[in-house]
Length: 288
Image (cartoon, rainbow, N blue to C red; front, side, top):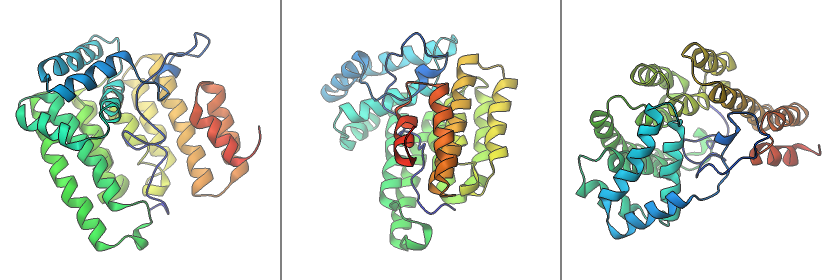
């Protein structure tokens, strides 16, 4: 498994996530899905609802986004970003999410948000060092938090069995325990419940590469399968961009091949000129 635990793309954080900002019209379709870090007006309202405990309005606001996905107007990947934005705008106060879930045990979004937040906390408990430099105490702490996260995510999955969003966090946790071998069964399950999902596909791609015991062929296979599932072309374009960024990250951090990494970051920037991640990668690996 890779030398550094942190990946280009974790579920919420990888140099990924918060909320999507407005993209210039010249960008190709799909580039609006590139993480921008720009807070939204809806996100600010949701954070206020969470702070004051107005869970009915909070659930209703998020439910609208899920309905938009079911109508084919919005990617479910944006729901994961809505939740991450909520975490950030709420000052990353875990107790607020726990209270939301505990007071609303039948809420899909309360269980999903708290479970996803716990999954992220588990990664923090483990640390970012290689397996050889990670203590058994850290691993035990990670697994304990992951077990708690899984309970909430399983509840969310049962409440809305047709949503693939809970699988995104489950995929990340499975990867930290089993490497790429634990990813594919969950991805297949996610694709079965929601063939048009993007959230589980994006999460899985980051853990199917060679550094996690997989291969680039497996990562590319996610894009091919998404094409066969007839995802919108913009979402396919985003997956191609994401694939290029994963290859660039691997070339930079694992292969230590800066020229190759720089070229891949350039390719990604040509695909989506609004990619701050590609810009930063070019800066780290040399000049344009």
